[in-house]
Image 1 (cartoon, rainbow, N blue to C red):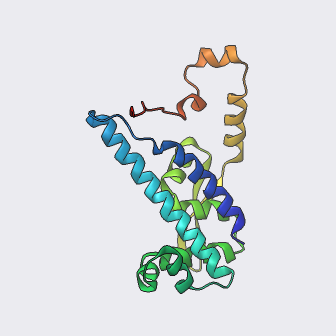
Image 2: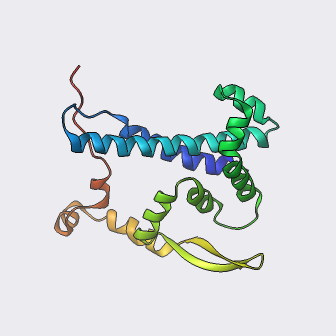
Length: 177
C-alpha cells in the first residue's frame, strides 16, 4: 500500500541530504542559499514524517504512539499532520493510476512543478465525483526522449552545451574547522 510511495520519497530525501552542507561565513548570497536549502530539507522532513505516520496508522499503530515517538503531544501532532495523513491514506487506498504522482504532488509540489516544466508530467482535467479536478499523467514519450538525449556519445553532448545531469550538483565551499 504505502511502500512504493515511501521508497520514491525516501530517494528524494536522500538527495536532499546532499544539500545540508553549511557555507562559509561572511557571504550573504551563500547564507541565503543555505536558508533556501534548509527550507527544502524542512519540507522533505515534513513529507517523510507524514508518510511514516500514515504507515504507522496503516499498520495498526495509533496517533498516541506516533506522538510519543516524536516527543510531542498527540493533539499537536494530529493537528499538524491529520489532513495530509488522511490524504495520503486516500491516495494509497484509491484504485486510480499514477498514485506516486499524486503523492508527490501532495508532499513535494515543487518537484512535480519541475517535472511538468520538463514535460515529463502532463496536467489534464477530469471529472471526479462530479467535480473537475487536475489529473497528472506521465508523459512517457518525453521521458524516453530525455533519457535517449542523455545517452548520446560524449562528443555529441559537448556540442549541445550544458547537459541536465551536469546541473544536478552544486558543491558549496566547506567551512574550515
